[in-house]
Length: 290
Image: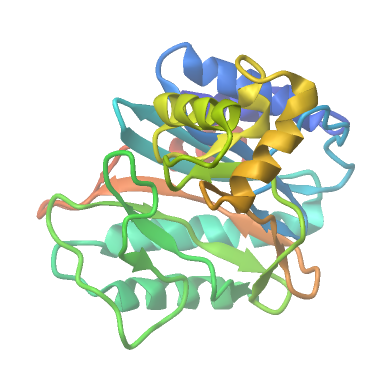
């Protein structure tokens, strides 16, 4: 998991988010391609914050920073995340989601119910005195499909699904000292093509086709459009394609009562001998953190 190790090495308080995201995305491009824009979600922001064009925000002092990265090669995806704490008082919150991930990985086997995995995650997080985020889940992964149906809940659920040998899952416990729910904000800077169709404008159609050619059904950043759309036109292009339901936007997700949120994530392949962990955040945690 070289990309997250790189993030752990270079991140510091005051670092521009745009610099961090672009360095990591370019690092990924050196050996594969990003499966989605680097997410840098800080404090009460739980997920889906990726720096926008000309983003001027920086890593705040004493913050809790989640870095979520995806790598794909020919559509085969690895999805992984770590939490970096610049506040000693928040380290237990980070440890809660990390330990929940490790316990879930030890438990996932063919024919195990996802609700039982969620129960392991919930017990671990509540054991630290925190709450799991109920409306965020892990997810099955298929080729070119990051969220492929089945989910791994972060709480005990009665109606789960069985996992089967050979399936690939991202397991991602989120822990919070807030309410345990996230809500959508009014902002979002990550997009995805949902329909390659004629929109009534030849230029917009050509941009949409180029988006599909480059990103397929995987999420992309407005920053990634600058090689084929002028910066001045990007906002108008995105607005037009959203209005025609040719693309979708991922709203930034925030904890309902502004609680701090931690996250750790691995991608695993389910086998009878135990999971094959393709990303292995535990190695980074041991080397750089706890």
